[in-house]
Image (cartoon, rainbow, N blue to C red):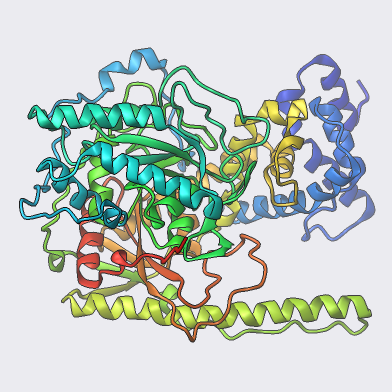
Amino acid sequence: MNLDRRGFLAACSCAGITSALFPGALYTLAVQAQETTGTDQSKPPKITSEMIDQAAIIAGIGPFTEDQKKMMIDGLVDQNGSYKAVRKLRMPNSVQPAYAFHPFPPAAATAREETSSEQTRAAHGWKANPDSKAPSQLDELAFASVSELASLLHSRKITSLALTQMYIARLKRYDSKLHFVITLTEDRALAQAKAADAEIASGKYRGPLHGIPWGAKDLLAVKGYPTTWGAGGFEHQSFDEDATVVKRLDQAGAVLIAKFTLGALAMGDKWFGGRTRNPWNPQQGSSGSSAGSASAVAAGCVAFAIGSETLGSISSPCTRCGTTGLRPSFGLVPRTGAMALSWTMDKLGPITRSAEDCALVLNAIYGPDGHDLSAQPVQFHWNPNLDVRSLRVGYLKHDFDEPEPFKPETPPASETVEDKKGREKREAEGKAAHARRLYDHRYELAALDKLRSMSINLIPLELPKLPYGAMVPLLTAEAAAAFDDLTLSGRDRLLTEQGVGDWPNAFRTARFHPAVEYIQANRARTLAIQQVSALFEKVDIIVASSGGMQLLATNLTGHPAAIVPNGLRGKDAPHPPKVDDGDEDDIGGPGTPVSITFFAALYDDARLAAFAHAYQQATEFNKLHPELGD
């Protein structure tokens, strides 16, 4: 057969074996064109609209519109750049991909399931406060911690029913302003609250979550109610079984009162019903994608919530809204019944008003369930009285160095009037962002000073220098597979956001990711896991800014993180941009919160929570809350 490579690919397509060969087709076409024209091969190969059409035919997908192809081209070129960054690592054959194959079906995994005995689920370190007093007006408890509410419920100074009704009333009052509710589960909640009161009165106390109202990010299945994933086209979707986390919180006696908003398919804070708002400044979004969970907790409309994180979806809204979040180690909390975005990165965790509350919630939901094969049989025993002075604490030096000066663009020799306007606009935005960064930097330095005042010796560290950004296609490739039907059916047009950085375009672009490069990126991820884990041979806890490269790195490596409030910006803070495009969490503004992040070794979540608890006892920033008005 006298076929060139392109002809061979076409022939294979006719033979029905394209699925194994397609992922590299587009790149191959681009490289062939590069070689034919003698283009500089040190640069990423140019990808054209025609090449996308040809590769799509091989793949059996599409056709794509001209607008869709234009959006895809830049991302595909960037993707090729990622391949080269990973290739520069020159990994030896001994480096394995960062995932494990389990050759047994879910039904065969029951031997791994953790028992749910009272001893296993005991709330280690928590005791009811017998001196707690109920206020004259129940609404005064809106911003109370889970621990405080639990003491009052335990002593029967308040009832779960009254507390539930108070929070439901607040959700209804503030939802029109903050847009954080997708579905109220009122009937279910009132029935659970009445049952909790009856059990507590009879002496059957289940623990500190018994009778406590909470809300779920609406990617968790709840039988009898819609589970919308925040996305157009899924508004009426429902499931016949509760998610494992929902079941476990039911067993703990917690009262589910609402399903909260998330950006469509867990991206950002824009959902099919609008945009969820930041209670500290409703002109801003609450960030995402656990948008409603963080907003509702910050607004005192629920005692705690469950969020999820794949690449910042607990950290970002906690930073914006001034709540406390604990993103657990990957595999600590089972995700059965939760929307899958990335099977190797998705994590479920609590969003609360304190690190102690995070520990109480995490204690109820961790451990294998026999269905999520990534869930690990590890324990969670936290000690709220841990002497943190005994810990080795490091900090990422680069995060706390003075931000580099702003550098304006060098104008080209010939520049059109339109290009000049664009450059000047970018420069103005860059200068404003730099001013905000300089202002917030003082809060990060103050956090280090506070830790030193707690008799903690801080050890400077650096994050391993690896191309973390080049590993992100792992997420988008898995997400595109998770929502394969959405792309193939064309239902992706129902999603609210349709820009270059939004899911419809990301899913289409990911179809062109070669299988070999996916595996190579996973091998690079193995190096990241090894090298980030090696930091914890030197220290027990690491302090970092809440943004930056650590957020990307630790989500890829699966390490746990606690995101805690770190004060409020003053009246002298730079003003935020007029338009919140959702790209940055720390857009600032007077009177809005800042955060700091602590992270720990894999499955050292309990010690992480104890450290965050000690910091909050010393600072009490977690007790600050917004004034909502009416």
